[in-house]
Length: 109
Image (cartoon, rainbow, N blue to C red; front, side, top):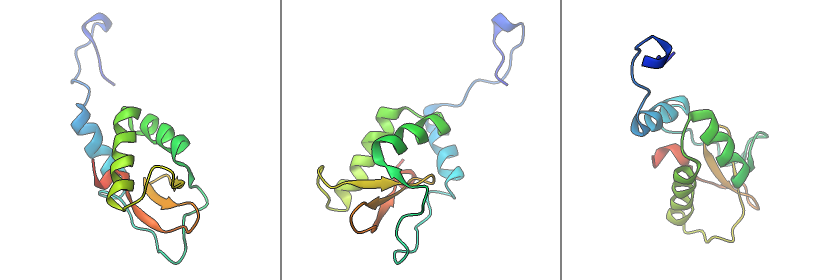
């Protein structure tokens, strides 16, 4: 994939963090996908801490940076730190109690 001089190959440079964020947004449907609010979170939704770890690994992003984005999404929805949330595989964030969609992690990257 990405060669190095040590490998005897010289390939293209790995993507920058900005390019990774763009790729993650594209993978999430061009910046996220709002779920039908009447349906609530999909079955693949996980508690935020686990989902952020998985999404960061999947998209090659820094976990801390993605966590900061998550907290901005919660604040922009007017939610405090103690409100439990779920995050699905596309980065959609839902309140755990009501299942209300509050935003997408990749809309804010």
